[in-house]
Length: 313
Image 1 (cartoon, rainbow, N blue to C red):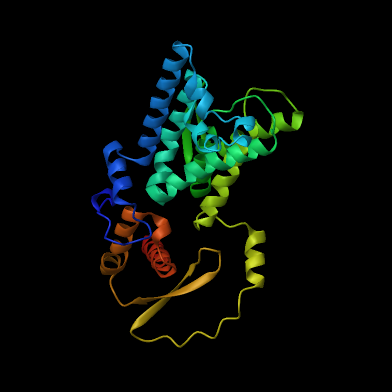
Image 2: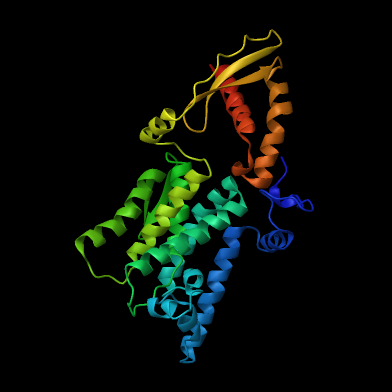
C-alpha cells in the first residue's frame, strides 16, 4: 500500500490532494499534527522571550480579546489557538494532540484534519466571543481545536480503549466515548454552576461541537436513530431489484446512513476480489483519506468486509 505522502498532486487536480506547497511543508515536518505542535512550541518560546524582555507583544497582538476583535483585530480568532498560558497548559494540549490527533489525521487525511483542528479553534473562539463581549480577559490555547480532535476520535472509534496516566502517575484505561463525555462534563458542569474559573469553557465546548458536526459531515461515525428515522421519511420508494444474473452475486451491506444497499460482486475468489477491487480503494484512502471515497467505493469495502466475516465463520 502506498502512503499519501509518496504521491505528488496531479496538475489541476482537486479533491483530497493538498497543494504542492502545503504538501511539501507537511513532508518537512512529517504530518499536520507535528507541524501544529512545532508551531505551538515556537510561538510559546516567542511568548516567553517577549515576556522576559517586559514587552509581551505576542500576547497583545495574537491572544483573543473581545474588545480588540471588535476594534478590527479579527485575526485573533485564528491566532489565539497557537498561544498558551503556561508550561502545563501547552504540555497537556500537545500530548493529547500527539496521541489522538495522529490517529484522526491518518484516518481522514491531512486536508480534512487541518480543517477539523482550525475550524474547531475558530468556532470555539467565536462561541466564547459571543458570550463575552466587552470582557478584558484574554483567551489563549489550542484546547478548542484539540477537543475537536478528541470528539472526532471518539466518534470514529467509540469503543477504542485508551490508556493514560492520571496525574502522570496512575494508569487508567477507558473507552474513547467515555473519555469524550468526561472532558465535555468538565466544561459543562462549571458553566451550569456559574463557577468563576480562568478556563474558557465555552471555547472548549464550541470546539467539541464542531468536531462532532464536522466528522458527521464527512460521513463518519454512527448516525443516531432519530436522524435515521428523519432520513427514512424523505427516502424515495425504490424500484424492484432486477433478477440476479448467473455471472454475478449480490451482497447486502449497511450504507453510510444505516440503510441497506446491494452490491454486485463478480464470481471471484475472495483473494482475487480483494486484490482487484479492494486494494486500489485502500491505496486511495492512504493517499487522500476516507472522505475521498465515492458511495460505490464505500459499498465495495462494505461488501469485502461481509465477505471476510463469512469466511471467518
